[in-house]
Image (tube, rainbow, N blue to C red; front, side):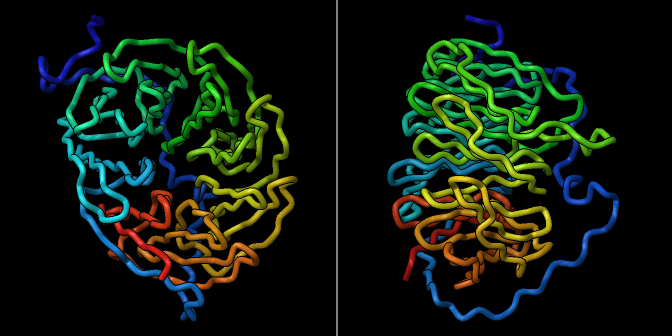
Length: 387
């Protein structure tokens, strides 16, 4: 067994030093890269609730960083908090199916395939969690990790800030393959993401690219560049893919930090379209449109086929919006005060609003069946369904 792989039943807790990395830049810097103070948030105006939703359950966990994600499963979600708590919840009732505690706290979360769950602890250890919430093993990674691990078919895929990609057997911790990619000189403290289709894992990189690898052996399939570094300063040249790419069928869409949004053919890597856009949150899509929130708080819709802007909502400017959730005929987006605004997917008009605990909604909302689940910065987990 590798000296970097430890089973929890043998070694309950340990700490190892971090490897040196290129400079990590706080994500908040992206919102004020020009150095000027942003305008004050736009006050919310009363909304006539054309769409009404009801809160069906709530749960509470520890504080949840903006770069964590909620893993969705049939009938369940898996979430984690910075203090090390990991929970699987029934999406219909909010009941805790299992709960685990990672001793060192968590820096990147959450990936799950329903049997195995993976997180990265604050000492750069990849942790595998079994189907009943038991801690299985921990592998000491060579670099800081913010991007949530992906778990698929009993394999865990993890990407370090140094852009190295490693694949492990989720049950045993065996290292299956490793792929290296050139890293940027300056990195943003903002998670990227991965999606899997037909035996291919597609991973956003710090170079404004999506790299595709064979899930079986890590051999490269294709690379697709959505944005290239421009500008004079190091900050202006940051173009890393941020947030979880959105995928529908054979189309994958993603955002390059402060520079572009675009879509790629998931089978060939051909760039379908790329359009300049200033933002740093993930996209959401259906078969007709792609929606994103811009750095200034605009909610922007693009035609999925060609990237032509369809509509813009500017009523939520400077409210530090979450990534959107496009589902059915509505777009849901959270803000810094814990409100969720619902927009018409047809024209962007606001058609409803609900409140949570008053803390920021930074993690992208998700949907399981008809239940939308939102996580706040304080760790409030809220479930809503159409009324």
